[in-house]
Image 1 (cartoon, rainbow over the protein chains, first blue to last red):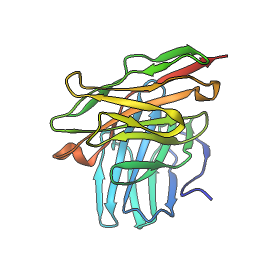
Image 2 (image 1 turned 90 degrees about the vertical axis):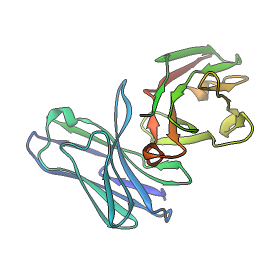
Image 3 (image 1 turned 180 degrees about the vertical axis):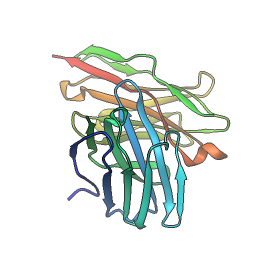
Image 4 (image 1 turned 45 degrees about the vertical axis):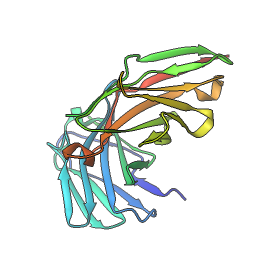
Length: 110
Length: 116
């Protein structure tokens, strides 16, 4: 089983719909992250959390929200999806600066 | 603010030839530098990192990278490329202290194609 698991792996939705991407980890790391990958833009940080009570905005947090339900769970929500949120989303955990990524969630907003 | 530049969108190399994927960085303090690889339809996988010490860092799958402080570079290298090395490579940097120490900043990625 993967150490960092993302669900769903693929989702197609319509503009205005609420979407939640979920992430769970078995690595026991306190730090968790959500990144967005777009072709030619690399990875950009959306939100990060250093523990259950610590949530921080990244460089592109507008239009997104997160919830850290437990040390092992960190979910990303799009309250009202729009087409330019079509992207590949990655959850990651970290220890000593090294990131461990999930397999990604591909979201398409029509 | 910290930043990473990968000047080449794509690098093509013949199988068996040496390969280099370039990366330059900018941070306020001392850099922590990383290389990650992404295979199609997969997440990113850690290759190697530089924190301190020897400027030549060895990592997974025969890759190595050289930290050059004066040129602010951290180029990824491999003596003999394999077709299976074809993938997307990302360089990343984190500041050792200050506000940037909480975030890893990624370059835009370089697509490596190894030609049989």
